[in-house]
Amino acid sequence: MSNFTKQFAEEVPLPDGSVASSVADVDKYLKATGLALSSDYSPEYMQNIRYQNDKARREAIFAEFLYNYKRMIWK
Image (tube, rainbow, N blue to C red; front, side, top):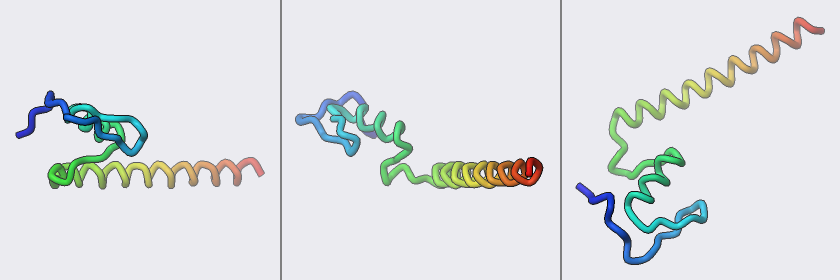
């Protein structure tokens, strides 16, 4: 189990240009960007990711359907 308040000896640059000075900062960055540590890829986490991807795909398909339906009606 890791200690979330532990400060790093040196600041760690993150891919978005910010820096992390503790494990809590890294965890906050991972949550904000929707990423996870490799040890966190549990079946529940992967199921949640699949659900989010499916939901986004369904929303995109429905938006395209509405767009085409409105085009058909108003022409």
